[in-house]
Amino acid sequence: MNWFNSIIVLAATFLVVFFAAVFNAPRAWLGVQIDFLPSLLVCAALNYGLGHVTLVAVAGGLLFDSLSANPLGVSMLPLFLAGFVIARYRSLILRESLFAQVTLGLGASAAVPVLTLLLLLNAETQPLVSWFSLWQWVFTTAVGAAVTPLWFWFFDRVHRAVNYRPWGEVTFRPDREIKRGRQ
Image 1 (cartoon, one colour):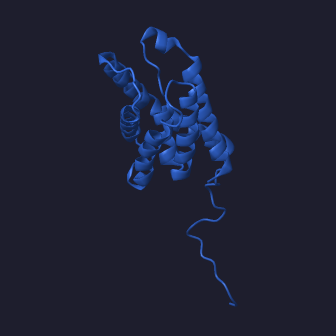
Image 2 (cartoon, rainbow, N blue to C red):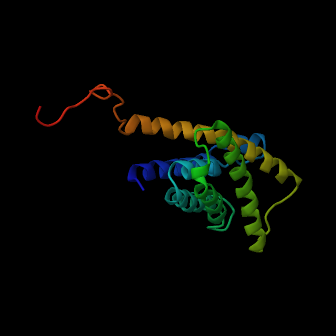
């Protein structure tokens, strides 16, 4: 794990949870609290691997639960499971494909709330579930799918700005013949 990548991913995780807690406009207008953590998790799983998935799941889950009515730690397992599946099969996924990014963002944004609800129901808590919850789930899933390519764009821009880019040209022509030894 690269320390710079870890810092950037953890900073993005903190900002996502902070944004969800502070920005109340979608909650006031539509009745939906938007969660960008599953889409960030898709980007971390495809770009960096299981170590960064664990960082996002643990840090994001604990931060999100500390600012919500959820019991502390209930969001970590669904986030980690969604990220684990993507990280496990990341060699088979076309990371640069916009369709793959949107599809994985859609799947993760749909799976994480459902798994969290199942954990809350098994923990004998009384979550507020109604027909309006279906609207919240559909809207959050659609927003997560739409935001996932933006995470890839953002992290690619950060890495292009900060990391070393190898020099593309060589100083010698590729068809040049080098003779060694005595002539």
